[in-house]
Image (cartoon, rainbow, N blue to C red; front, side, top):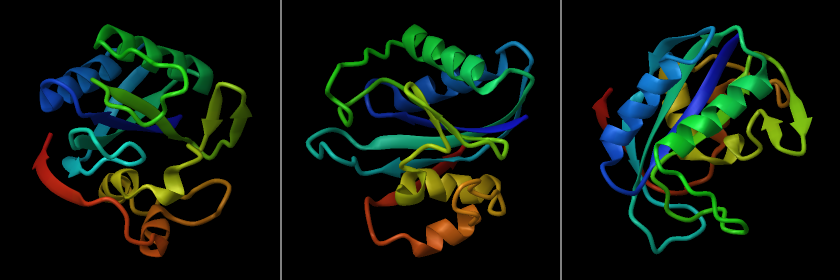
Length: 164
């Protein structure tokens, strides 16, 4: 199954942390790294008084089911120092891994929602997604990533930094 994973970091050595997360994702069982977008420097969303984020998208092929992949992503976050604070959604973080798309599946569980509910409204996710697969289709909305990006109102600044 092809899965798209969003990566973000705004604390510590942001680029090194994202590179380490990508390396760890490539080592997950039954999972192969297919492609990684460029890095993008992005202004924060929600809580604005924090450092800019670096964001990227990784594409993997996996034999894991969505829940197993998601739980492995949480373990990677934990190993890289992510501490989730209840009630604080938009705060700073060493690493953030989001399961954006999982094939053409729509999953609505209490702890896992795929496609990611904020995907259509987030330039910092859509820009790197369009870079790696502009024709990927949102399984609920039926629109490509390029179409979703073209419909997006102005939001946070997303600036390409470098290739990974």
